[in-house]
Length: 337
Image (cartoon, rainbow, N blue to C red; front, side, top):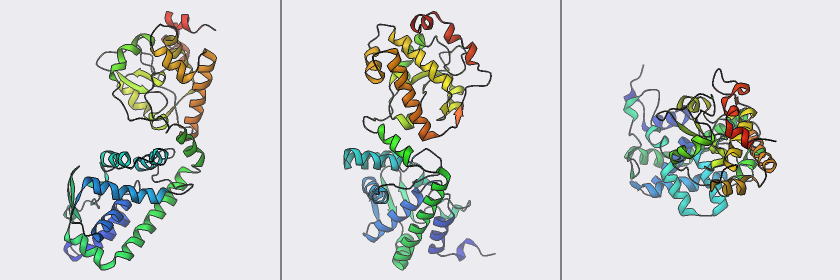
């Protein structure tokens, strides 16, 4: 059996592209980016130049009427897909490239060289100081100089095969993507949510939204009932308090309809108070209980289109019929109808 020393740099490159772990198309895109930077004569690349090259590559790939999915999980999009979609909406290149620098390289840069546990391949084609620079190696330049066209063709073919496999896995995504685009206008980066805990506790009766048991100060998460990856905001009408374990079990799954009814009830508790958040909720959902319920159900149906019917009904043992939330005085006062 040959040793690792018997293989050329080109052998290693092809093995990485063909057999490296590819849960998304990032490795393929990074391979094309490395070849392009080498062809431009770079040896040391700043993070902003790397991000700009990577962004332009994805931008050209996705700049079609109905772009193919770039990863395998149904209903989800990669960071690059979201960045390109936001760029189309706002045409802000500086923000797009800055977001690539911040969000797109966490996994692909450190893991590009991962191949079946072969440690000796680490650093073969580049070395990096994460967030600052990427240093291209002589072996990368040598591989690129020998067969640039062939390597790009192989990368394009591999990219296309991945997209085809992802399309089969995700099914028809046109409707889901159209729904997602509704929430891009007005989207903003995730904010720190712990400051909402004291406000939400009273209106929720200081119980976990998902299991109905009492909350303890050291074990409280703020969760988006309808996953943030679709709605792209942190509006109070969609935030609830949960035990950390319940939040982890839920993840980004679609909740059952009984939790939407409970969320409507919780929001009406807020609307029955004199808190300034009332106006924000009314502006977002509607001025009457009927309008608010209708709008929240509309959001729920949108999220259902994107995420499918992978429902999560709540923590084991939870029974919506005996949920203590509905027995609270404030809930009964504010949800009479």
